Amino acid sequence: MIFKLGEFFSGPGGLAYGAKLAGIENKDGEVFSIDHVWANDIDENSCKTYRRNICPDNPERVISCDVKSIDISKLAPIDAFAYGFPCNDYSIVGEQNGFDGKYGPLYSFGVKVLDYHKPLWFFAENVGGIRSANNGLAFEKILSDLENAGPGYELTPHLYKFEEYGVPQTRHRIVVIGFRKDLGIKFEVPAPTTSNLEDQTTAKYAIENPSIPKDAQNHEYTNHPEKIIERLAAIPPGENVWYAELPEHLRLNVKGATLSQIYRRLHPNRPSYTITGSGGGGTHGYHWDEPRALTNRERARIQTFPDDFIFEGGKESVRKQIGMAVPPLGVKTILEAVMKSFAGMEYKTTPAIW
View 1: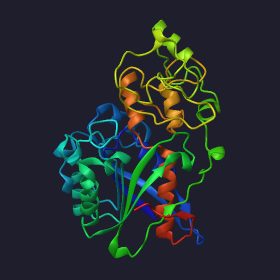
View 2: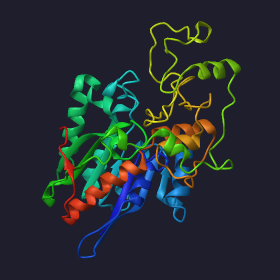
View 3: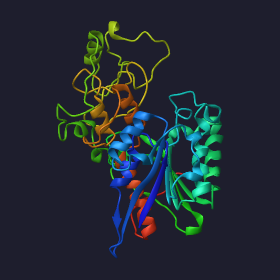
View 4: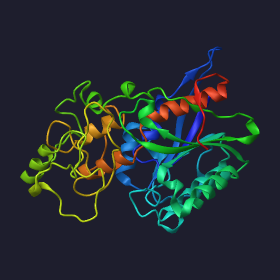
């Protein structure tokens, strides 16, 4: 069974690449896999990256435009749908404007796809902060609209801690899996594979095994001013700019700001903290040993992209693409559980938190 996948807000293709990696075979030899049919994103560099890595032979499948301008009825038929609708108005780092923000209402375009195309299942992803937006009412409204879309969907929302699924990063995201109610199939959350700290993939292992070739693409180093280099050298691994013993002349003169990511260096023996796609000075992710920001290739390793997954665009555009993506390895685990559910295969599960 090959599920034909459509995707909105596709970014550079982290979800799609995870879908390409996913595949199972049941005891009767039947193969279950996912085939990409169409995708959309407003960012042209993300679309170029997607075309290069996901569908180089069919670049026309990627539609680069504002989702509001798409005629959903003209899109090819699908039986699976995925979207990580923009999280800007739900992130705990932002103002959490929720539905009142510019991006908050964009989830509704995925609902329209479900209404028209009625896929067998869908995958919706967003930041954990969505639970708090609009005093919690935004999340309730989104779940209600997804459940009642099209023929009706049985939802399994869960907060996935991706470091517990082999991803070398403490990235926590809400994923909602929806199965059409008329199928009579219940999705169960796959059990973590690396829930113990000693089993989790460390930042150092991800970046150094194997070592990144010096001529690898997207591996440009940042030229830091001397003071930044001095500051980073004085911050121990795992600590940030608020480190108590940081010399006075290297401290930031910012009142009331204690964001933990600012000039925070990775700890070599733990998963990385969350890799972000935007933010000013001090938010780029920093090497545990060398006093410098991570390269985009190192960020991509932490997001579980292989070295031959090449990102298009300038350095900051690539940083944004990587930070906004869903880790392919985490996607693979979830989607293989989806396929096992359709195949009637047993797998280890854990209770959904909702």
